[in-house]
Length: 178
Image (cartoon, rainbow, N blue to C red; front, top):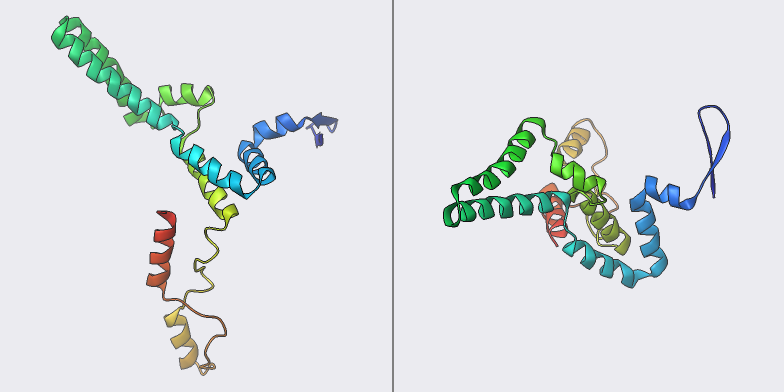
């Protein structure tokens, strides 16, 4: 149990389930960590097959439009209205950047693509996929070195191996696309 303070200064007790609702990603990561290294690969495979809210909405809109057109041609022209309804939802999304259908699905527990990607990156970091990649500390800043040498600073080789910025960017891009 975790003790939290309310606005009135009264101490309340929050159950672990309540904490997991607030930070579901941390709870999922904790479960994977507790299960061991093999669980990370298994969970990454599960994430690859998980449908995001956006994917479900796009699939639903596509099926509705195609069904409406096919039924309008084959059965009766009034079925074309079935193709128009998803068009209204798309127009609403275009102007507001909020999807009514997406919000409904998200409210029912489906996750957005960003939420799924955040878990995927966290799992890959836990697995150690990013350990060999260069960081900003490892990238050679040639302009800074030349300014320092021009100002009379020491022209010594750095102790750690420095990587060209373009090479570092290529390595990072390859790692992200794996």
